[in-house]
Structure formats: structure tokens, C-alpha cells
Amino acid sequence: MNRLLPLKTRIAALGGALLSLTICGNVFSAEDAQLDSYGGVMAYEFEPSGRFRLGKIGDRHCLITPEGHGFFSLGVTHTSGVARQAGEEQDWFAGKFNSDWEAFSQHTARNLSSWGYNNIGYDSPRELRQLLPYLASTHPTATSRWRPDSQFSFPDVFDPVWQEEAKKDIQVMVERERGNSRLIGYYWTDIPQWDLVKAKRMRGANWVETIRNLPDTAPGKIAYQAFAKENPDHTDEDFLGVIADIYYRVVGEENRRLDPEGIVFGERYLVGDFPEVVVKAALPWIDAIAFQPGGAKFDEKSCDRLYEMSGGKPIFLCDHQASFPTPLFRETMWQQLPDQEAVGEAHRQYLEAALAEPYILGYHRCQYVDRFKDRKGVLKQGLLKADGTPYEVLVKTVTENNRMALDAFAAIPTE
Image (cartoon, rainbow, N blue to C red):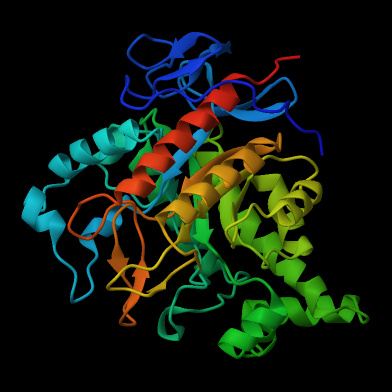
């Protein structure tokens, strides 16, 4: 893959203007208008469109703000999670903000902006989406890996009834966000279970088996039997591609019909679960690929593979982090590193590696405030503890890293 030039500019001192950093002697900040009101770098000029859209700076894929400036997405997901508690969590949302989303959103926007973040990813309150760029999402299928078995299902995508329900999901999402210029783009189902072997191991069945075992009168069973007759040497992977073709056409056509100029990122694929027949089926309907990687180090192999599969569509790192144990919680989600310092250093290295790939549109950190999983003792770690106080070392380092990333983005050669 082509690489950017090595990082040459210096990281700005902390404590300056909002999203302020020094680049080759020039200060970029929202206050002195060298960042636009969406966080775009004004040195990169494009035609204003009033919407976020995709573009290129030299050989690098990028987002372009509604005001027409280059934008590298640095976001934090799950800000709405502050209202989702497990039993033993302190209710900071109620205690600090009286459960008022407007007050919480004002506070959160100040925090995130001062830490070098320019958007809130997905799963955010409506009030916060009026203050910072964001992504909309919906779930046309109940195939997310995180769903318990009681809430999980592989739908019959050939059934007109399901198709109408899926279209309604898209309609609700698009209508909800209509007219908000801070909308970056659209997501569909989160970490769907497409891989036949992995789904079988975890759920006891996969999508092809589910369709094949439907009653003879079911639309999916009729479609499978016709496919098998016409393709006697087919594999289950072949029919998985047919399922994906139907699914993506239904939701993709509706998303395009309702918002033909919106950026569609499609499903958020989990590392190790994006079969090529599925990605290929999605390509006519998506503008970029949303990818949720694992591990603490940048997954260059998976990203390169996705980029090649897509024929050159950019990639959005939509949800990721590394974590560390705390005195109360020794078990944490994501790859666990020894302490805050190690997590901060891993974040720096991750951003540098992502920026070195010209197809990466941005990096979004998973989780704003600590939440505990239903299984007792497992921490889904945020930048803030459950009582709203920051992990000071991590926040300081993340702020430096984000400003380094914007520094590097602002130094991209344009030719």
C-alpha cells in the first residue's frame, strides 16, 4: 500500500484553544477559523455542499465537511451509554445532570472537544447530535453478535413481509436525522454474524441452514430450492452470497432512495467475520466500509484485505479500544494492557499506523463513561469513571495523541 510521508510536524502544547495545535508554525483551531465549525482543516479546500461527503487529498481518502474542508474523523461512541446502568453503578447521569440530556450533552461536547475529538460516532443522544458531527444507525436484522439467543435471529430476507419491515427501519433512521448537517453518514446492523462456521459454533445454526430448514412454503425455502436446482454443485457459501445480495439490495435501495447524497457505511463488520461474498454483495450499496477491529495493535492485514475486496473503497475504524484493569475491576472488555500509560501508548501507535494507510477515514474509540456488563465484574471502560471523573493519565495522553493525528492529517501532501 502507498504510505504517507513520515510525521514531521510537532504536537501542540496542551491547554490551548479548542482543537488547537501547531503545524509548521501555524496554529489550527476552531477559535481562529483555521478549523471550520465542523472540525475540518481549512487548509484543504473543496466546494461546500452543506453535507458531509467523501473525497481525496492527494492520494488519501478523506471526509469533507459541509463547509468544504478536509476532515479526519476522531470520535467516541456510545455516549448514550451513560443512561444504561447495571445494578452497582453510580447514576452519574441522574446525580450530576438530573437525567437532563441537554445538560449532559453540553458537558460532553466540551469534554470531547477539549480532548481533541471532533465527533461522537454512533449511539449518541439527540441533543448531542446538534452539537457535534455523528453517525446514524439502525438494525434491519437481529443478527448482531452481542445479542443474546433470545433476541437473535436470521431473518428470511426473501419474505416480502420482512423486506417491508427492514425498509421501515431505514425510513425511521433517515427521517430522524433529516436536515441535520452534522450527520456524517449511515450505519446498518452492528457486528453481524455472517461467517457460517463461527455462527454455527456460537448459535447452533447459520443463516444458510436457517433458510434451508424453513417450511416448504416459506419464500426463503422456495428461493433456496430453486437455487440448488439451478446450481447442483453449489456450496453454502454460494447461497450466503445470494442472501447477502437480497438483504443489501433491500436496505441499500431504500437508503439511496430516501437520501441519495448521504454517505452509507453499511454494516459494522467485526474482525474475522466478513466473508468475501458478503462484502462483494454490499459494495453496490455502500460508499465506504465500516470495520470493528480487535487487539491493541493496528490490524493492517485485515484492513488491507477489506480494501482490496472493496476495489478501493475507504475504511472507517468504527469502534475500538484497549483497556486496563482497575482496583475494582480486574476483568475488562477489549484487549487488556497493564495500565493507563500502556493504553495511551498503544493508542498513539494505533493512530500513527492508521494514518499511514491512505484509505483510513478515521478512528472511533469505544465508550465514553464506564459501564459494567451484566455479567458481574466485567468493565466496559470509558474515558470517564462511572462517577464522571476522568482517567487522568489516559485522557491527557489521548488528547496529545488526537492532536498528533490532526497534525499529521494537516500535513498530507496534496500532490
